[in-house]
Length: 276
Length: 290
Image (tube, rainbow over all chains, first blue to last red):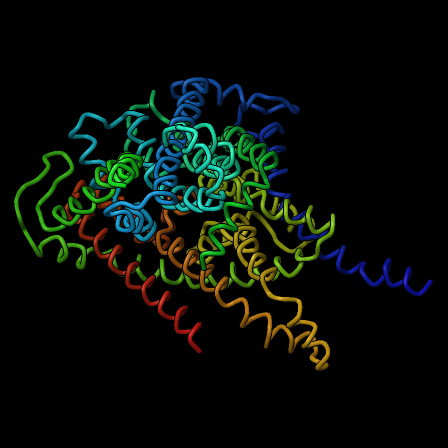
């Protein structure tokens, strides 16, 4: 009886405290969802609940379809570049010895030390000169470069964790190193690949500064900058309803990916944390 | 074996190209730009050192932005590390409830900073924000509260946003550190009759030092480079009281259209960050030798 009593009542403050904290953390998210469909003055949704704000969002600037497509395209392109480049390099850094290997690895990691703001001004000048400004490819390349320290480190430790016997037997069977990488190594580093891909996707999907500077053509804009600009378009009053509907559209893929791939998400942070 | 050396090198060519083209080259270019007259529309106009650095020094926003950015960094770092540690202690148990709490605390981390800032923009607005009406019903406030109206309110609102968005991130880093502490240490402390406060003070905190250092480096660096949250939420207002250093870089480049001074400030920021990170790493290593 005493134990049961302790279990039920002794822990109650803990559940009240942590439950309260959880509600505080969830409240803004729930509020944004509610605000995007609830009636508010000076929005498209004035009477009753409904999707009027999403209607405004659909037609803003170059239209939600174009901007959402740009954002998805940018994110997938960034994932592709980051995953391919860091897999090849991670394999080389983990399994080959060659001149300049450690220097290149350290140089890649040192990207972490340099603020992106310091690099974006010269990158803007360079890419404009090359005629690559206002292209999603250039933004994808830039976001991918900032992902490289984490991605290369992650892929290197993933390849290093594979027992050498696995690849040696294949090499003896006459496979080339690329066949070994593609057929034997890649399946074994899938958790690392998913982690790297997930982080690259979220980074590109949410990137604000690089598109703000590099994509001035409205038909090339991505969601974060477009939704931030959208606030100023209605004369005088700010349309908070459509802003919050934009927040919901931007947040939903992140929340879904997070819930589906939570394991890999945590793994990504942990690989960073053990370094310290 | 030479063949294997060549093959290994070939695999790193994409990385080499990307790093040289989009990291090393812009780094050299920003140095050159900081030493040159360089307008946004007309481009390079010849060497003019130290003109850009003098102009930045004389920029009326420079010192206020440095002071504001440092204030913000100190405030956010203290709150995030304290809050992150608190959350980590709360969710460290291996139970279903703890697992659910971790998921909840991590949820805002998955949002983009721009998304979270836009969410906060509505959340703190007198027009649709829920806080003002709630306080009013409780009789704690009268009329609309201007959460972005004074310099202090704007700073505190942004701080709340950032703590909400990133607390889960620091919780996770410190949780990994907590789980790395051997149970033997806690058992030994319990046998010696240590109170839970003594255990925390003399075992948990010292053993957490590597994780705390990493968290501090990430938090200080991230906060010194703050941009999105202030660009979106406060726009540097009221009266330019919430302009951060990176916002000054942005304004120099795209409003005053002087890329030379923007590059000069970028170089200053870069050097200061490298210095701070080097000092923090040294402090961290010094701790290991003790």
